[in-house]
Amino acid sequence: MQYLYQLIGVIRKVATSRVTPNKWYAVLLAGLALMLLGLTPYASDRADQTYGFKLRLTTTSDWTKVRFGGVSVAAFIDEVENFGGEDLRVGAGAEVRVNKSSFDQSRVVVHASVYLRQVSPLGPTVSITKGDAGDTRLDFFLLEGAGNQPFLTLKNSRSIQGEAENEKKSLLPGSMLPAVTLDAEVEENVDKKVLAFYYPWYGTPEGPSGEWVHWDFSFP
View 1: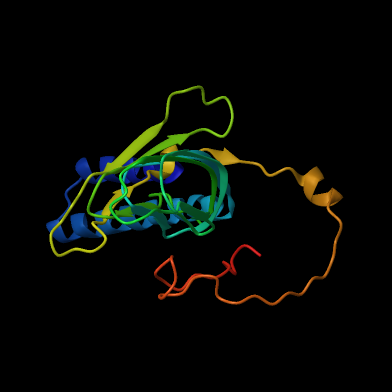
View 2 (view 1 turned 180 degrees about the vertical axis):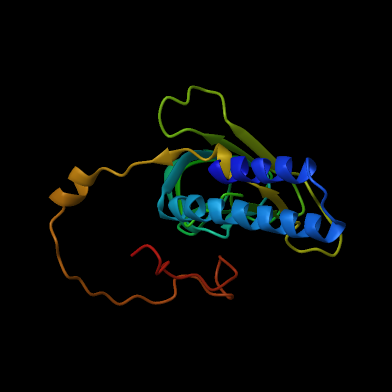
């Protein structure tokens, strides 16, 4: 904010003096530079902060995926409500996904906890992809003390001919994201161990998932 005050002071001085158009341009460019310098520490602080929220995904499509762009993501499934879906498969990690039998339009509700890092001041994009039938709705809630009212709702009902994913992208404004503080005491009480394991790809293009799927290395 101090940079904005400085810019206003410069403009006032210019407005009361004789200044050529070229000098006006120089003043404006200098002002923009000051504002950018002021935003740099703010952007750095946001990148180091963790943001978290509860996500309620409701879908009647036979498959759907939710991705957050431009950030590091860790999503965890809290609860799944299945209202007749056949061959239901739900997963989370760097995304939240739901798969059912083809053309199955029964309702599925997924409750998840989502944590974001490396968030820009503008905020991340939210990509909702889905099958041709049905729709997908996202309701965003605070982690605690949220009540029953979401702070943001997004919906994708698209069925676009010739487009396999029917993608709809929206912006999740950074100003809406609630910052969270992870419990340091819990982290300190966890036993420190060195573990090694081997795993195969648990999703393949030939299998039920229809694509390659493996553990998200960002969140071991």
